[in-house]
Image (cartoon, rainbow, N blue to C red):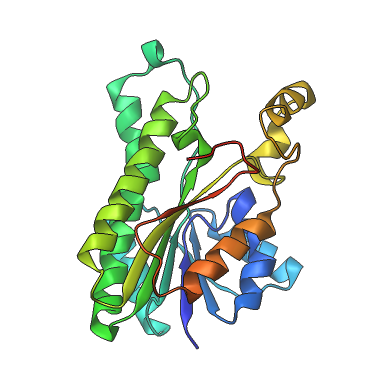
Length: 237
């Protein structure tokens, strides 16, 4: 059985996606910092997935993670999902805070991708999928740092796609909009109503729609270096 390695698997959006990811026919290798909570969630929801705790800002812990992945047969699909939200006016954003955000949202993907590609290049096949956001293309007030971190992920994936274009490996990004899961549940109702007015389809997305995009990329040998937009028309390139 082939493996999907999903980072940031303990987040609200990832947990909402797990039931549909489990239907794709891959073994799920899940990683997060709060690994005990993730294990409890998988047991409670009946999701078959192997869990490993790692801080992806640490080179050593990422190395340990992928040594564990190799013990389970290696990485066939890497989904770089780890990240944190951030909101601050640009004139209040300090370089140290920007550096911390880039380490979590961008460099974690770089570390994991490097390790995953060792296995993929040896096999001559693989998929790297990184998760971005509509905010990378349509920022709102206070999102300059988050926008920069996700834009970096998208640019990096395009570069990876070029490097691996003739190696049987694709690299793409999914930039999703406001989904009815995860952090959206913490947004006040009045703000949610305001956000919805910016979405032409007048609805928030569903986590399974992200998995549908993932499924497409898993099966497509000729799609690489792309950003798939799943946002109800909120951003139209």
